[in-house]
Image (cartoon, rainbow, N blue to C red; front, top):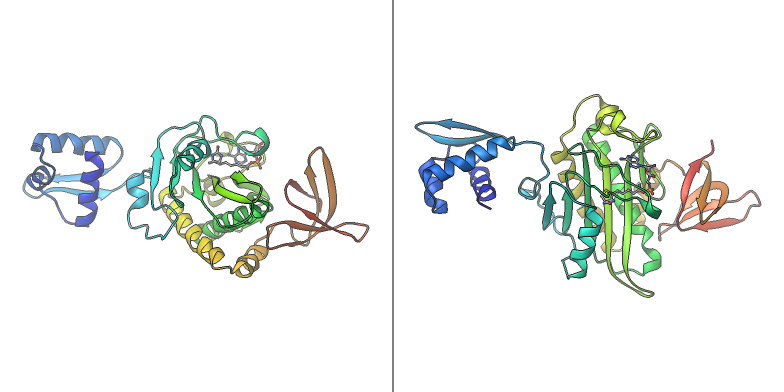
Length: 320
Ligand code: BT5
């Protein structure tokens, strides 16, 4: 798209002016056509100064999650090497899943400003207020067995909690297996889906939803957003770029087999370890003391009987 090419041209120039003539020559279009594209970019929220003698200069970019903005100087090795961005989508997980089925490379992401069919686990809904949050899915092809898939959710939740802490200083904690909380309220949910056979993974889709600038009224009762907690708007663009870099780093550490290092950081940010919890799953539940998370991402509970139980999935309720 010419708009994207013009943006790239501006970005490469940094803070200097670009003349209309230069742009028209570079892209083989008339100066009027260049001007029309500049107007279109302005309509999208880009602030572009125009001077009769000097030409155009990019002053500021909108907080939009486009592939051009996200990919600019992202500098990751795997995660986000290719970015598919949408204004509206059913579910980013569904689109990522179908791309992966067609052979899409590991690390590609699908991101959208709005989801009409945002999903949680077990057919639950994920509310995705338009342009207020971050909703994306990453395609991974990890060399692990399907039974160890929880470790991918573990890496992802750690990356989210770390990003929140680094960018906002808010005390984000991870609620096993797939939530991130601030002040005991859910700010992020993760949906990890797998395609594979009993002993082999073809690909994994990690869907991450984060409430960034949504007001309380737009969210479910027990949810919060970064802006509600921080009492100011947060740049979604900055947030996603930082998160993609953190995911890239932790996924690399994981691929080097250093899961111990990840677990150490994870446990420090856990909202449930050393607490009494109930885990609900498959129409039943189990209560106990959360004592550990193991290398496969499973939760270890100490039951009242003294026995240890290894839990692979479920919904955790903090008891006290
Ligand atoms: C999750 O499921 O928390 C996983 C959510 C994953 C969402 C991402 S967005 C990008 C990608 N594309 C998708 O379609 N999905 C992923 P679960 O643990 O089952 O929690 C679902 C429950 O969280 C719902 O039943 C609500 O109670 C609550 N919920 C829904 N929307 C929420 C929101 N925006 N913030 C906080 N809680 C929410």
